Amino acid sequence: MKNAMMIDSKDNVCVAIEEIPKGSIAVYMREGKEISLPVLEDITIYHKLAARDIAKGEPVVKYGEHIGVASCDIKAGEHVHVHNVEGRREDLEAKE
Image 1: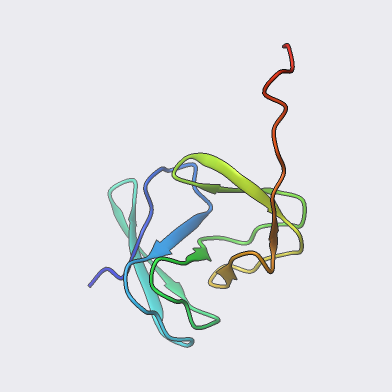
Image 2 (image 1 turned 60 degrees about the vertical axis):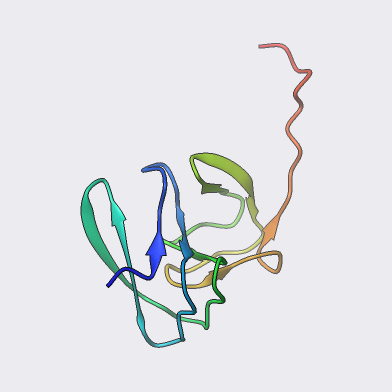
């Protein structure tokens, strides 16, 4: 039974669609395949968990979009939220 979801194959987080307790398994679909991931912390419904290890300074990607940058190393299965992600505004006026 799936208890998390991932929208885009570029995502490095998935979203809990129900409470997922520490020590259980998150199950979600990625590119048509069912993925199982051990959960390292209690995850509140609609909160994010790392789908893979995310290095400090690496973009956090949800729904195919950068939503911030990891402020520390985040292990697969850990809660991803304001305590380990910092926002970085993109310069939308920059010319390429």
